[in-house]
Length: 424
Ligand code: AMP
Image 1 (spheres, rainbow, N blue to C red):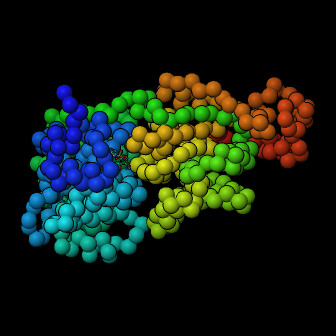
Image 2 (image 1 turned 30 degrees about the horizontal axis):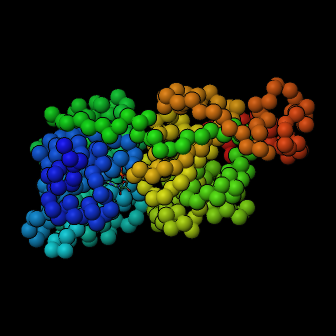
Image 3 (image 1 turned 90 degrees about the vertical axis):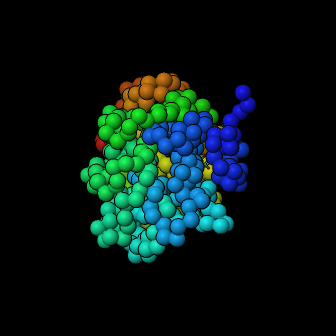
């Protein structure tokens, strides 16, 4: 049998052409499985890890079924996509626009999310829209203002459903669902599958086809996963060293707190690295700008919280650094999935200290891998040294003698901050 093409999956020539224009030469595995089922109108449960091409997997068939070729002047909302974050809303919107705009009938798309003024979004919805991509809170706000009607929706997508559940979105999600017609096609995508996603899937889906892009471990083959043993207090220095020595470009660094994003980015910037923070307390325009700067290469190192762990697609992102380890092994998969997207290769480097060693083991166990702990000359961990008083360690470590500052740092690291939150 010959390899599937977008045409052979049942897509129209104009949509198949849009795929070629977007640079997609062949459908990805999840697209091969999902597109025919969705064109038949089936519900779908997608276990789709990051970077699998899942957005196009749902955008293409929904465009074909509900949007492309319709002639009416006023647009009724046929497709609603709910996403957990503003950045993901913008990104999903871009995919629809890229694939669904035709010269004869431009796609009318409304991307609505919080953090920006509501008025332009109300204006945009005034003449109707084919597709709404929304975060739940702002969508409810618009519903209450009668700025949007959802009673014509024919397909609902919950993207990153696990996240829509765990951020306390449940109440908002139920209110949105109540505004939709009962008869509709339902699609639920999730990279991970905790029990509450299963419960939501059971409640929402009818005779759904289940597609899995690949198991998590199989889905991340091109990512070179590394761990480096380093004392917590020396991570910022090590990071700067690695960026400089490795000539790293486009690096995403994950830390545990908003404060740490600012602190670490500030320290790097003061030492000549093009670094910037990204966190949820920044304004939407600031958040958009730093992501654009990273994509454009004017920012080299973006230091962020788990805000950026999911959904964000930065082409050419070469390295992901876990400065602080993620709390859950699932988040590890999401974080490192920011690199090596769409078949490219990438590296994921995790800093492991004596205090976080056990947690790293847990992450490895869930991934079914065991990674060697590397050491970088000049940054060998003192905390892993045999249990001798800090002073006695002098001279015992190859390559570098701990100075007074080191000893103070070691003492501070020993006092607190914990495995997740300390900054160096
Ligand atoms: P997603 O999993 O939807 O976030 O997609 C990840 C990346 O894969 C995006 O940059 C897409 O543009 C790209 N992509 C999606 N489908 C294909 C395809 N069939 N061939 C090549 N790249 C694709």
